[in-house]
Structure formats: C-alpha cells, structure tokens
Image (cartoon, one colour):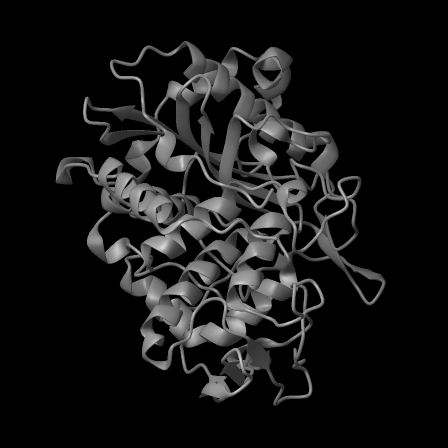
Length: 435
C-alpha cells in the first residue's frame, strides 16, 4: 500500500478568474444527476459490503457488528464526460440518518460556510473575510476576543478563524464564528437549504447550558484604520427544537464519579452523514446540487475554502504549526488514520473530520493528481467498547483510526484499478498553498 502513497500566497486575479470559471464549468451536471440531501434507506446496497469483505482482517469485526459500532459509510464514484462534467454514483453501507452519531468537529464546516454567506450579505458595509472582528462578552459565561497572536498583525478575522478550523480543527475559532452567525441564523440558513434535520445547538468544548448557548456575543467589525464599520449586538435565539430522546452507552463520568445510566445526547448537535457529504459536495461541485442547497459565497471565497480544506499544517505560515505535534495527516482520518510524518503532495484530501465522545467521523473528497483519481468518501464509527463516556478511554487508536485508514486505502486501491471512459481533468482542484 505504501507504493501508492510514496506569508499567504497572493494569487493573481487571472489565476482566480480562470480557476473559478473552470471549477464552476466542471461542476455542471444535468438535473438527473443532482444529488439531494435527502436519503431513503432503500439506497443501502451490497457494493461496499462486498468490497470490505475482501479485507476480513481489517473489516470483519465491523461487518459482523455494524450497528454496535454505529458504522455508516458513503462512497461516491465520480465519472467525467468528454467535456469534464462530473456524474456521481453513490454507494451506501448501513446509512441511516435516524441512527444518531455525535458529529463533533464536522459541524464546523457548515458553520464556516454560513459565516462566509452571512459576510456576503453584509458587503454593503464593506466587510470582507479579512476585516478585523472584535468579540465582546455580555454574559458571565462568555469570553471576549480583542486580538489574535497567531495572525501577522494580531487582528482576529473571519478568514483566520476559518483557516484554523480546517487546518487543525480549532474549537475556539469555530465558537467565534458561531457567535458571529448566531444560533437562530445558522440553523435557519441550513434548514432553508433542505437540511431540515440539522440541529446545531452549542459551542464546542465550552461549558454552557442550553440557554447560554442561545445567547451569542456582540461583535464589531473594523476597517484597516480601526474605525467601526459594523456593530452587531448580542443575539438571542428563539428557535424551538424538536424533542429528542437519544440515550447511548452504559454510563458516564460526572464530577469524577461514575453515573451508571446512559449518556443523554438529546441536547447535543445533530447532523446526518448524507447531509455532511452534500454540504461538502456543494462547495466542491456547486452546480451538482440544487440551487437552494448552494452556499451564496463568492468564487474567491470558494477558492479560499478549497485551499484550506486541503492544505497541510506544515504548508502554513500563519499560524505556524510544529510538525512534531501537528503533522500533515492531522485531521485527515480517511486514507491516513493517525499516520505521522510528511504526506505526498500529489494526493490531496479536501475534508472535515471530527472526534469526540468515542465517535469518529470524516467527510472527504480525494484527488490524486498524478494518477487522475478522484472520489468522495464519508464515514463514521463509534469507538467506545466499555460504553462509558467522559472517561478518556475511547478506542480511537485501536479501532477508529485503523478503520478510517484502511477504508480510505481500499477505496483508493479500487479507484486506481477502475476503468474510466474519460480521464478527469482535476486542475481546478490544484491549489496554491501558503508555502
């Protein structure tokens, strides 16, 4: 298998225009090929199961107990026409949006996209993703942000928050975007796109109750001279969410003591695997999804997203990441697992992953520019054999990361041997990285 894996750059306007135009034109597809966010159980088929059976050493335990591991997989073949238009064939294994998994950091992707979309609606104030943003606090549980030492000039920006989200899955960066967007705006925006079952209720890794998460901080945008150009007051969400009863596991640790009853996820974030993949597809191939599912962002914003969805931390100038602690495959679970060290530059993974409470999830598009291979792959698995939450004894290293790595590899190997009528032109996804 190893044989297969042997200062922000200023791009010229011409590069932007050509790349954006190519990306949009290559994304075109007929209405019959549109992939919607909705899913029915009839779409599960035997293709993936038969493929996984070829590697029993890696997948036999999962195939025998798919529901225990809460495994869900979506593999999407992409075939190009002579004019490079993509058509999508989706294969599903055990996919069921009614089976809950904690999405962890994967929710940062729709949060980031919605933040860019909201920015575009505020363009009359001459706000851009590079405009300094000051976050104040109104409640005792909230915290302010006046500067960011990881930026070149110390000024926090939406762009820098998004960079940190996709490079290293920074929780604070995601929380700041949640506070800018607001809980009600965020959920309504996603529901209008057809993602009706999505519920993004809270910040990440911050102890706040349900009511506190409804309240989001006041924020202020400044221009380069430090003058206020847009003050946004504190917001309070009036959304009424559906009643849920999601109890998982055998117990959980609370205040250092074991509580011997299932952990309650009823007030936790919720999003399905098909919806996550559809959201990623809407960025990569915007014309392949229905118009209402697309995020209303600029072509330049799209290129910005594609860069940081696929850029390695070591290729980043600001922030600077220590490669011994933050390696190339950090956050690239599918194909790489927890593999450390430098990764090949000709293979790029455009993705958002997440892991928490024993759930490991990754949603990805993969491109090998040397072999002209492309496909989408999304998966989630539950790695908590003792059924106890908050004990920091999850099976990520023993089960989760190996499963993700081998799943990515078996699909990659299949794709490397699969016959295609047309060799895809993937140049639209070749990004210029910071370094």
